[in-house]
Amino acid sequence: MLNFNSITTLDFRDKPGNQKTHRTAQRGKHRKALSSKRCGNCRTRKTACDRAQPSCTNCQRRGVECPGYGLQLSWPRGNDGRRAAEGHRHHILPLRSKNLEFVNATDRDIEAWAGSPQGRYLEEGKAKALGPLVSQLLGGVTLGQIDPFLVTNQYSPVARLLSSALDEVPELYTLLVRMSLADDTPSALAARHAIAALSYQHLDQHEAAVLHQTKALGALQTVINSITSGNTENMQAFRAMAASMLLNIFETLNFDASPLSWAMFFCGCKKIVNLFHTPHTSYEGDSAMILDWIFYHDTFYKFSVRHWYPKEKQQILLAQHRKVISKAVFSPLRQIILPSTGCSLELLDLICQTVDAVLERDDPQHLSPSHLQAIRRLELRLEALIQTPRITTVTSSNTPENTSDLTETQIQTQPHTQPETDPSATATTVPTHEQETNLAELYRLATHIYLLRMARALPPTHPLITPLVSRALTLLRHPSIQNHGCARPWPLFIIALEVGAASQHQTENGSEDARSVASGAIEAARRRRPLGNFVLMRRLVHAAWVQMDLGLGGDDKGGEDLKRVYDIVVSGVRVPPSFT
Image (tube, rainbow, N blue to C red; front, top):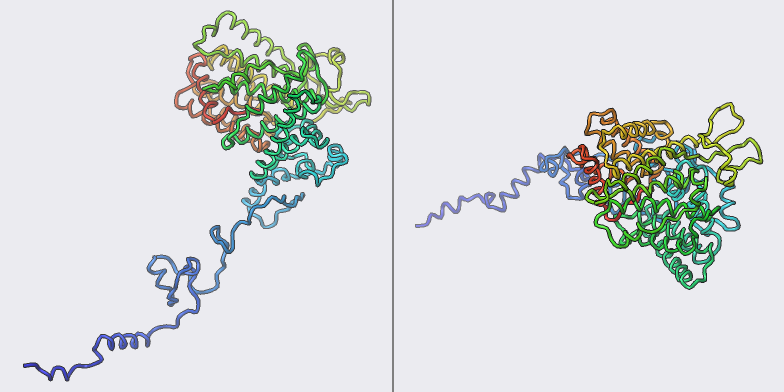
């Protein structure tokens, strides 16, 4: 029988619903007051918070310290859409100022400013107002017609890219701006848009740079069509050459991203030059400066193509083009150091012949009697070469301002000696003349080292090699090079690879100190010319040193392994690198 008495004695508070109500009532007697706000972690993570005291349950469960519910400072985060840590980029140039004073700023803040596009040229009080230069460049043209960053500052990125960092007023850049602002013809527009493309590229505004590059290509195509039909004046042709060279440089700076090749623009430029250049003729003025600029690039493109594998047909044709030099063979002006090249035209010609003298090791003519005679002739010319810097004097109003204004007759009557720098002399020389001389000497030493190692195939411990390397390292340690940097990448590249190969031997130059000297010179040059090719050159040098540390290029196989290192690092880039 069912026991109904057990049913009547049930406590209804023990039912499931009544039990929950009872526990809630008991816990409510001991619960502390909840916070009115979420804790700091929950606010940052944007999650619900039980607001329990002294710490929320979410923080306890995650094993982190609860920051509490008090007042906290909230800083913008990079992924915060409401308050971005960085402002949106725009194409309006920021206001430029000088005589900056950093108050309550950290070292990182100052370094960030110095690394910005405009900070590179305003640091150390280098922002100068060039009123006479601007009036000379612009004439009746207003600043609103062009980007003001291009002409109002002599430390313009394009100016420092095209000319030596030692120039007080970069002549080549001045000429290019003057050409681009001459009129509104297609040749001037092509040069103008090409300069703007380089400037915007430096400012990291790629869309604006590509836009100006496209406009420059369209204007240049119009000029080329006019040249083909025979309706172009010489000045229009030289402007087209300048625009082609600027576009060529633009492509060398975008060697990893651009679908185009610099060889296309340079081949087109050489074709225009061959139509208007007369061999064995001396040119003066603006046309000579443009031709020297083209010859400078032609020389080191020949070097790049020599060590590039596999070679394309267009590259082979480019390397076989005849040399275009603005001065005749026996002109004494060929020994003058040019600011746009860093060395003399005579040395550039010797570099071209040295590159041609480098043959494959399995070539039947390699180290043949005729080959050795050609190498010996180049050695004698390099040893006897004297490069004369351009010196500005103030002794008399009848004295030419610089050696480029002298006639060939005046040059021939002067002795081929290095200029004296006696402080008691009445003539005042330009302070950069020592830097120019040292840079030209680095060019000569690098050419001589390259000739003996690559063409003559001498080992790094040969008695003819070690004095040249010692002299080169001494120049790299010179204050004029350490403070201002080597303005050109090619001699640094040759010397850096040679000291890397010499470090495999126990010589006076074969130490880590030699590599550190070369690395320091490369880094100083990169800071001096941030838009130039020193970043790529530094990458190539480090890649070459890695190959040498792995055992390639450091033995006594007559330079065979070092040539393989040259070929490997140069061919490791998407397009032949530029050493200009």
